[in-house]
Image (tube, rainbow, N blue to C red; front, top):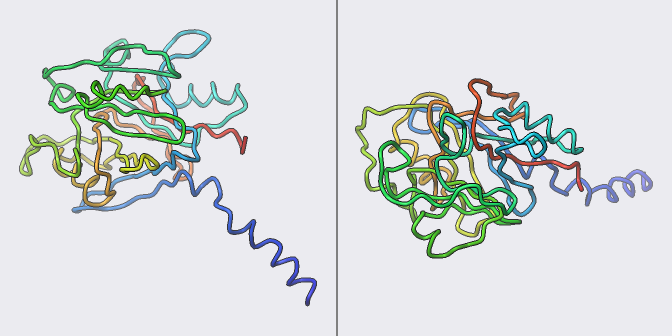
Length: 251
């Protein structure tokens, strides 16, 4: 018996170590009678990145499947992905976009038509071990030097408060997706509604349930998610920017 217990005790430290699934956790939840799929990323442990074009062909990746194939050729896997901001018909970003330190498009300021121009909007800023949603004017003032960045809008939550133009009784309902970040920049929470919702209801999810003081709307209608642990791989029309977690198998 002593031998068996010695083996068990020797394995306890390994059993206590968090696995890969602990760092990217996807789950279903219900808030205010609406179902959502939520994926939480630990930015201190996961390789969270933005993707737009294939590095060799220069063509838009456009789909989770194309991104998976690209990463497989590099000896890596796609652990999670979501569409990451609005785009034009040619799938180029509507707003500011930076990938791997290279700026594709500068910051877009000022109000305008559509959800992107419903100010304030914001930027998802990704660096090694830190991720933040930053309101656009603050982003310009702070010049945070993001490794990856994508601008979208409107902001859903700003300093713990809902966007001032959201209406509780709005009749504008769409399937929507977005991202919120924790105050310390360690946690990014991505969510997509499972049926059409208002901006007000979607913002409340991030503020009241996911408890992210800053949150950004990414898009609606074309909202898509790749979450293999849930068996979810959304297809459809080609996308523009994609945000994803790269798993290199413990490298």
